Length: 418
Image (cartoon, rainbow, N blue to C red; front, side):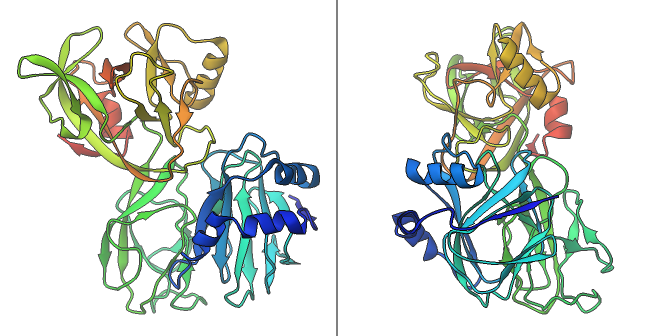
């Protein structure tokens, strides 16, 4: 495993452009005692992209919005993860700082214009930054999507780090008297990965102490929170999966209501409502599921995000449609390239009725939804004698797939309204 270090990859004029950018300035103002990592995106001019390509081989020519990060104080040992598979972490410091960046036990000083490229899987941290505020481009993958660190909870006996958790697991926070640890009580923690496709977790229970995050808070991989109490306690986290086919809230589904066909917002549909299918007439809703998804807001095409189907690309649409990357538009034919990409993402090519399922992240007519944030997503399963089958339905006028009862109930990780 390698670490490559590059000095002065950007000149003073290029660094000044970044530091004086309006988004850079406004993002820095968001740093607080309990919010010491601020992620944001800016558009970099071609001159800076040329410099990064020439100096460290980072190709950002197709990246519209480049990830940036303000950080205050030390970061604890962690391993980067991202929304998709990647080979290397790229980070470029825009400002100087006291202290050192430590990668794989090797120490490096932090200075403006200095870049680091190191293999995915290498543990790294910063030490002795003395609460210094610093700015960096990235950290990102070679494809330009943001990557970030994960830290680990200790199990209830204080033994090994917990890196795999199930939905509803109660996790004791570091610092309790019976957990042996050298970390101080206000030690900041990262949320661990669990080997599944996910946006993160949502906090559903907080017992015994007054620490962040609060109930209802979305917690993302790499997010940092400070525990500000020595009273101990537990936090209950529910997984938020994001590789399921889902509709963004307010999507309108063609139904048969009051003796007429009309579109209903998906969150207003109840079990028993009749939904129009393309081949099987009207079918009643058996189950409805809802969850949340974190959308990165960048232009990286992965299955774990939202996509926009616009009216100019899909003439049958009544309104622009927003669906997750694994949600399928139903089509008569797919190309050989689309077939290969579908197999890469899903392991196989699937059909619904007589139509191919062309997932949104593969369909070149879709656009990555460029708004960052946490969004409510929904799906429905219709009555079907076959537990594993689904239907073609109409969303904002476009023919797309519904979800099978089996997938919604057993695999989606969504909260069900039966």
